[in-house]
Amino acid sequence: MPSFVRRDAVARKEWRRICPMLMKLGVLTKADGPALSGYCVAFAMLAEAQKEIREHGLMVRTQVLDKHGSAMQVARKNPCIGIAENALKIMKAFLVEFGLTPASRTKVNATPLDDESQILSGVDDMLDELSNYAN
Image (cartoon, rainbow, N blue to C red; front, side):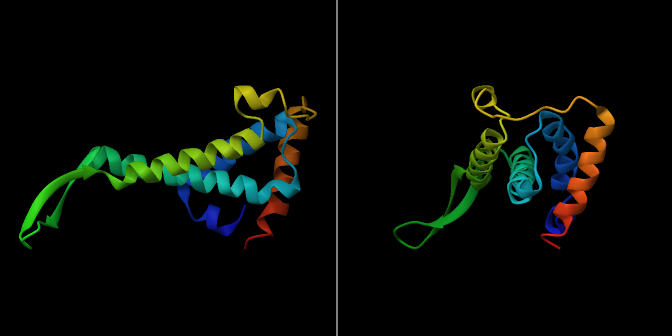
């Protein structure tokens, strides 16, 4: 696991959750480290944005200057909504690549693994290999 994923608790947890699933589906290879990292980082960005939206709401109050230079409060869309939308787009792009959406699942040509020990062994090997590329 790359160090920048390892340092983010949410990204790290998602990496550990999704790796076995992707291995079982037979779609994860050593070459997929950057894509998997990108997905996990986007997942963490979404989680952080959602946390901010829950804490501050969909609208936030901000101070602006009117045409006379006087300060006034206005309500604006929380900027974290845009961050969440962008993270969802990034996540969807990676999920499609891995065949994890209903429409894309039929287009991915992979050999699923059935043996649980083979999957776990493969995940361990994959994690070792992928950790080398971004440390």
